[in-house]
Length: 217
Image (cartoon, rainbow, N blue to C red; front, side):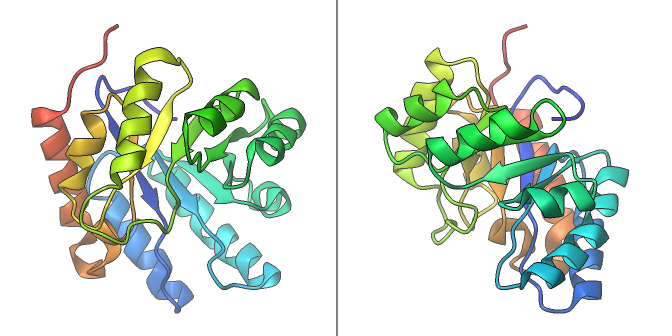
């Protein structure tokens, strides 16, 4: 989504922190920890006006770090905040409408495919990427086995890149990388202890540098 690296790259899910200034600082610090391909910005419990302000504050921070800023669910917010893309967590129909309306101006991807059939339906609308899992689906230390299995199957036969939602343990990034997925998304693994976020990003990148499989040229 930004510069190309020959192995699986990290995607961050922006943290759910109540104070806007704290939220922005924690994210900015995390991005200083190392390579991040993109940051997905969910709405969480914010109303539309607050989400707009939230996005407008975070998008420049993300972009200045060299990552792509992807707004979850709201194309108007994405446009006003001058984000790079739109993350759609709905079904293939919703994703297809977004792809048709907003590409190539915006990166458009998403999915939350529950099985191979739904994944193929999502692939048919030609998004920029497919997401296996939910952006708030990191409820256990490990990535969900179903998402890992889907990603391994997908990566072996489909050219559209995929992102796998990891778990609450930073080490879960390696299991995602071993599926052949181009990206692994982390949220609580990085932001569970906000002051540790930069060192976690650095550690995950070091782990992927050392042990993640390399993509064929």
